[in-house]
Length: 506
Image 1 (cartoon, rainbow, N blue to C red):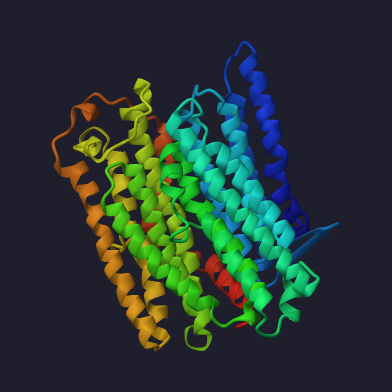
Image 2: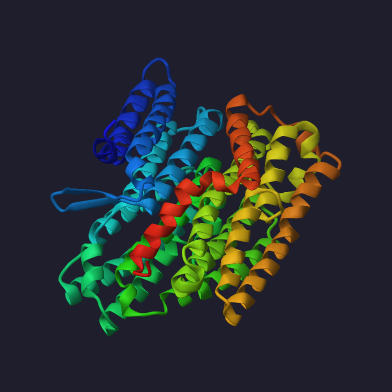
């Protein structure tokens, strides 16, 4: 297939298919079948087709080229970062769709769930490819709307509605700030195209510095920058487990990519953008870990851990932007490798927890949270799920030879390459935070494998094959990338090079 043909369809297919999935699923539910089965399988087929289209569209990118598409006022550009983000969200979305076959089976509005999931995937792919500020904001809003409706999916539960409202209010506030930033950029430069803005901005300008600050705050809400992260634990814990995996594994990273695209156009305005990323990275790591230590609900614990892991990505990106001559693309490549690893590791963690939540609570009609004591002895009755969760959290904790260790190690090495005392101190701080995270990851493993099974575990329901299949695939990927990290270099290296071009340091 021609890459120039595959590129627009890679974005259009999930967006066009989403309302069709909903309508066919709705008609099926209203018919005698009383089942949303067509919606389930259509979602999986669409995501598979999107992955195939991304494969063909990405071939020129792997050769160091970019693809550009202009349709009236819509400008799209497929580069290394867009390809990485698109590949990650499509893969994780497919795993979530398969997992949800049983998890969401029979829930009211099931057809809406699959339609919104596919729409979310399409919006994130579009966001990664946005080449001008206004369309970047539009894609960002489509992602926000679809994710909000999925956070508040269980609308008959007050806690779910509260989480959805908090997410909506904070996301809307961030969107307003982004629009103000766009207005300032347009007022100063008279243009919205990111590449064009980059060519005309050649020095400090107070109005553009203010615009950059607004972009950091506005996009930082979605990316869960501390202290803009307060929506995250409620949203992740109250959403269906598959959506928790999407929110943690890719939605906050999409917010980060959107912010990087916007800031990259203003790179010449200030030399401190990279330093700000390093500062936010340090705060995210520390606050995320400290908050996770005190959690009793497993999904809230994993949610706060996402705040911490975003910090590692920020440090890797900040190292390459701040010290381009010494670090080069190494920090950015480590950050993007960690982005993909975090999607797989945290996706695996949330889906494993979701499988236990389904077996211990949901299958009995109870939508209560999964707490730490529910994990006692889980390995006796659910050995495969417990093993998957153990691999996920130990990888998140940075234990070798799992994938999380390798991406963290790449960021550590990049930090030392800077030969800067403050940067080296930050690397040591990162390492200590990685050890600190084991303070809440290790007890999870200990509970599952060394404690006596809790009564709720002994009476739990069976975990279906459709739930165990994504867990097996994600577990395998987490282990393989730990032993063979260069397996993903074809995807992370172009992304790192594209980032350096955005910030004019390559």
